[in-house]
Length: 150
Image (cartoon, one colour):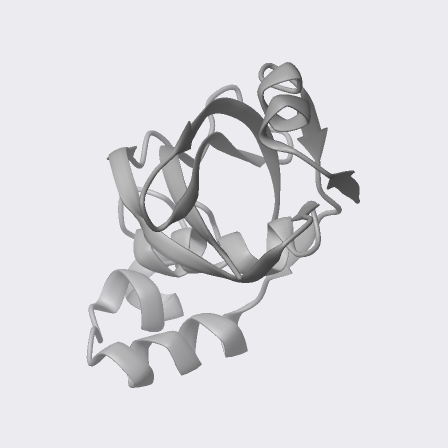
């Protein structure tokens, strides 16, 4: 984990990259996500039908892969004086490649921008979620986090 004691330290870290550990997305996780979101498309849940479909197997929901960002980037940085970090939003989210059942993903995050605001420090991180063995990432996005200062 990178620890920063000032905005200047954060700003000097722009461009730094980190890579997470791999996470396997199995059918149980896909099914639980389908239940949680009421998204029960056959491409995610019906192995027989999916085998004859465009990907040859069931695939993870794009939003499931995106929802793994907290797990994939947990503890990547801390900021002195911050009482909490808040998910401020996402920009430019794309899903270039599906994740097949039992696919392994990891996040490559790059600190892209640091801004001081009335609320605290806003950090923009470029996120690429890679799929093991694929030539394209499964997700690319800009993730914005607000660190509220105490």
